[in-house]
Length: 449
Image (cartoon, rainbow, N blue to C red; front, top):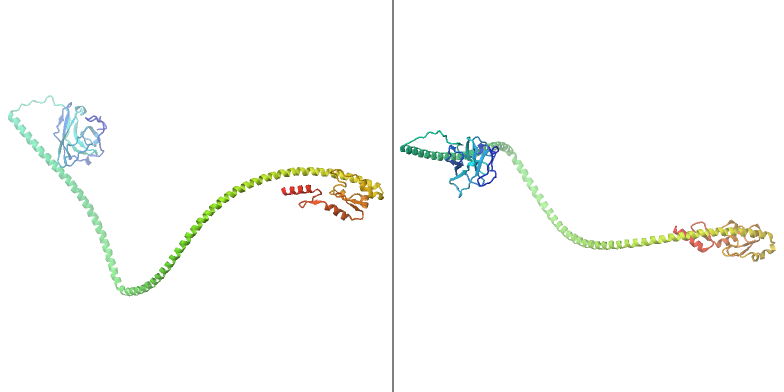
């Protein structure tokens, strides 16, 4: 009903929904709260006061509430309206406490359906319910009945007796509810005992099976009892052998203990050696660090030296290029000198053919002096230098390097050996040089290569 009807706020202005539950009626306990003086109908437009009694089976809590439910409700979510249940002035403990709540007319139903009060705890469980009632006006056509004083007193006495019977019935109902609770607890205990009994029965069956198996084993042991005599004798012999083995093992154990003492002393010595080695290792580590630092310095120094060497190599390459240029110039000058030498040889050959042999001693004086940088008889590298012409070779030979004269009777090999002695041969190639400076420059070019 709470989901279909409007849910008005409580009297203190709070719009908080009460705690409800989706549990069905079978899980509720209606006897913990008893509703008193519930009328059969209430007049619409007036406030309704609900009286109820908290029994010793319930403890009131802050979120308990009393709601008005339409008859036929299934869960506590179907309330029409509700009011928060006030807490008792003091804890009621084992005594019943009378409480009351007043519902304002504005929040009450306006139809003539049957409703009832229900007390719901903060867990959403129903702890008590009233008899049904209606909201409707008194019939206007009610008959006015006039009674005498005696009849009134008799009616009042009947009402008093009925009230007394009602109280007795309520007390009896409460006792019956208490007995019902006790019976339910006894039923639970009985169910637990039933479960325990079934467990005991199963355990008994297991024990019986174990007993049967033990009986079978006992029978088997009795059958084996006849063989125990011989086995006992064997066991005695085994005990004697075990005792002798024990003595032998004890002697070995003593020997092993002595050996262990020796090993312990060796271990101590090894530990000392290890300690010494650790010190040595530490020193080696320090030396290694020192060597690493020196190696780093050497690397830096080597890098610097390599840089200097590269720089020097660049300078040597530059010098080689300069010398190569000078060599090229010297080669050009040598070519020119060879050409001049060839011309002079031809001239000398012609002059020798024209003059008589008696004039040969004056040939050196008549010959023109060589100019600066010129050769008198040509370059010895040239084939013409070794062959001065047919007439000159038969009469006189002159060293083109020192000017020494050789008569025609001197062997050609001796003359050539004399000329060769003035030349400087390169040990790395086949070239020869008459100038020492040119020779040294040539060797330097080989080294730079």
